[in-house]
Image (cartoon, rainbow, N blue to C red; front, top):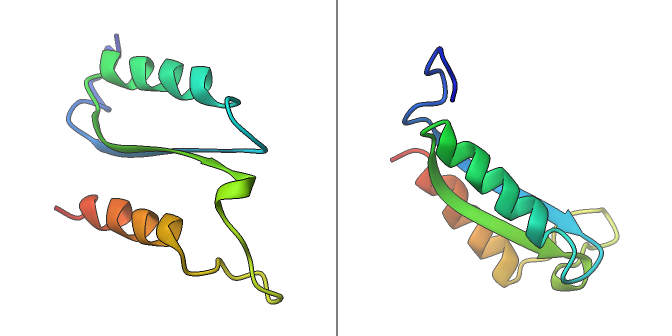
Amino acid sequence: MNATGEWANKKVLTFCYTPYAPRGQKAMQSLGWSLQALHATIIAQMLIHHSDIGFDEKGKLIHNNIREELDTAIELLSY
């Protein structure tokens, strides 16, 4: 437990970016448990694999479902 309460009710968005499934699942689960123990408010958890996304020749994220999910998750932090 966080004795100072610094994480209590803080909005948190967690990401894990790994090469392929099922990598990252246990790490995300462990991080979620830790944040819950600190009483943080987990807005969203995103487990993203290399095969789920793509980048254009300039290195920008190609607009796809992942991009929309990221935008939505980040927007939720402001509420």
